[in-house]
Length: 126
Image (cartoon, rainbow, N blue to C red; front, top):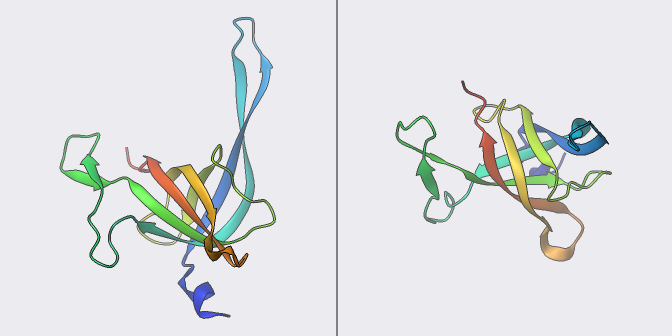
């Protein structure tokens, strides 16, 4: 196992939403499909190398939370796109959180791993 693989401590499920047939009102039924579950590293933006953190007021009005993240993963057989979501299935404080994908980058042009810019959309708490 490589040093990079040792950093991938989260289990992330790539979720793809598709629209089904329309109902009488013209609304398509949405179906969420788990495309793949991969090892990844979910990291808040701005916490490395002295960068500033991106914070927003928590939706419950108590303090602030970091909403922007970068997810690192090996390139899976089904590459996620900006229309997919990532669900953290296991791996610590991010377990149970859902992220909207903003941008998918193939890091460094070496076909080594992906760097995915995400925004927290479901904190997993009620």
